[in-house]
Amino acid sequence: MSSQIVEMKKSQKAQAILFFECICSVWRTLFYVIQENESLKSLAIEMVKAFTYDENERHKEKIPDLGVFLALYTAVCDKINFEDFVDALIDENFIRCVMWWRDSVSRGTADEVF
Image (tube, rainbow, N blue to C red):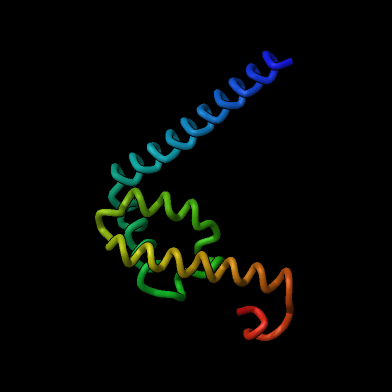
């Protein structure tokens, strides 16, 4: 029985490594495409700058997935201040968490949410 558990754990570890390598490959492809295409790079820089410096550009309608957007930032991070971007990302992430919590728990006032 213990040998089966060991084999299962090895299999799970191998699957996790393959998944990680796949994610890294997708990121490398994103990075390469953005670096090689100037118009795409300009668009990415404008999107990240807008997100960083304008709260109206952070809404879920414009940036539906913050994780994907973080990957986009890493492709153009040399053009935008790191601290400013992280502040904007954390603010938006916390707002989205509170909005989800508020919608699922209470339809009350802001005092009940916070």
